[in-house]
Length: 175
Image 1 (tube, rainbow, N blue to C red):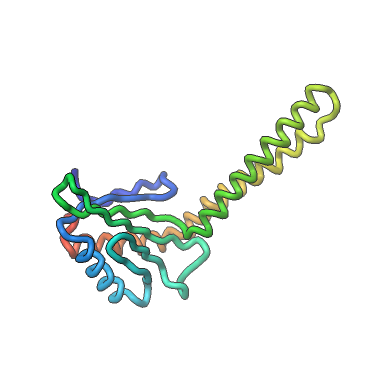
Image 2: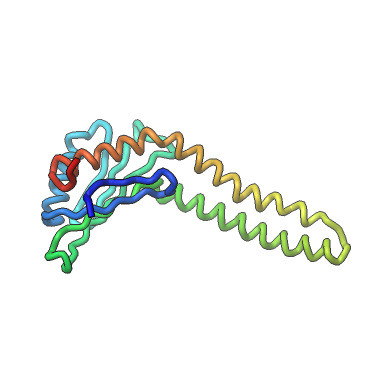
């Protein structure tokens, strides 16, 4: 298994996993030093268990992604550190989309059942057409998420190049 970061474009929340032969405390100290060196562009924090790296607010947009890191000591690999990273939106954005999808599904299910029952009984077809509201509540956030991913592409590249540079300079991964 190589220690290269592979990010697949199809995934909505790209992730990576690398192993390091250092302690979580050493890694968090080194990452915080790198963050201080990039204080004009990136912000964040890192302790011995978790870390978050984000683009600073003056350069931030609504769609700006952040990198969430989790450090774990694996006893089966003789105490080596496993670093897991997930690129994704802030939790408020993620919650908004999850709520929109859930609401759309509930509206679609409710109006769909009611509408098709009325249609089958020959009462009318008004409620069948209200299914469009549920579809819009599902398709709208999906389309806006795709647009947001394109808008946030530059920020994603900034975060990706930063973490790759840190991992290369600390000799956690190799070219």
